[in-house]
Image (cartoon, rainbow, N blue to C red):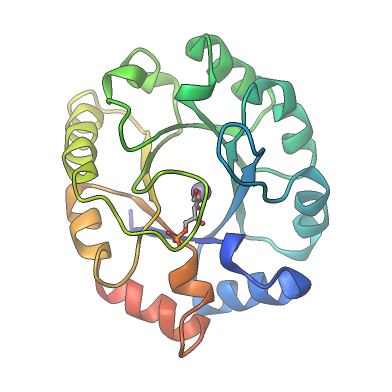
Length: 218
Ligand code: DX5
Ligand code: ZN
């Protein structure tokens, strides 16, 4: 399978969200990454259910919802109804990860679990076989435009080995600090899905150039 590029709308112009998403689709991204922040799990607030609901009929692209919120299970049904294809919750935000993963699956969405840069892979090993996707943060979650932490590469490599050794279907997604300089090493470490926000939506030559530049590196 080829690598997937997911454009994070966190860095898009929200007054023109439909156009920005359409432009990303025309540029060839496969997924739209939708960051939800609650001001508690992370020190920032972004967008939520009504914005996702508005976006759903505006695009056929896969909507990849990244919940950076406490008690995510409480809201997963609403995000699924609003149009999420993938729903990713943070391991650090769940008391009982196995049960939380099951609750996400029960909505009918594909289920992902995310780990902050400092959270070890061991935290998800008991559920990895139940996941459609494992998301590694390359930065501390909360803000776009930060620098990728290279120490996360080792964790990506280890996860790749576990997934391949066990013959799992779990996709490996990397989010935060992805750009034309970091994409190659992230891809070589074993990522299937690369999320990019500021690189795509704030590129000086525009969205289409940004996506072609990224694509050159994997
Ligand atoms: C950060 C978000 C990311 C963010 C990435 O907490 O989860 O999806 O948009 O931004 P860049 O690509 O600018 O690092
Ligand atoms: Zn994200």
